[in-house]
Length: 107
Image 1: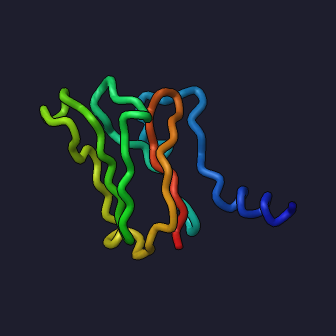
Image 2: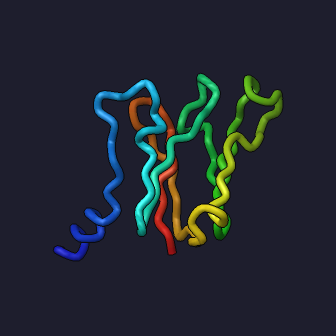
């Protein structure tokens, strides 16, 4: 049981309460995990998004006619290769204060 708590603490990403105007201040990267808020067009919800994870990067796709006039498009793409040199093990889209963000762990 204690090992679960340890890993949880290790990967504790900051939360923003109350929400600041600039949500990017909540972005956080540690040795084991990252949390990154995604700049999205207004009106897009977490459920509209699809996460595509490769070894050293992730892309977020979404249905947004506002953004690009297509059913599905890449909204946000992050290449970790240059920044972290660490492959991503798993990443998920979460939401805080109505702002979607990606949280993931490194291999």
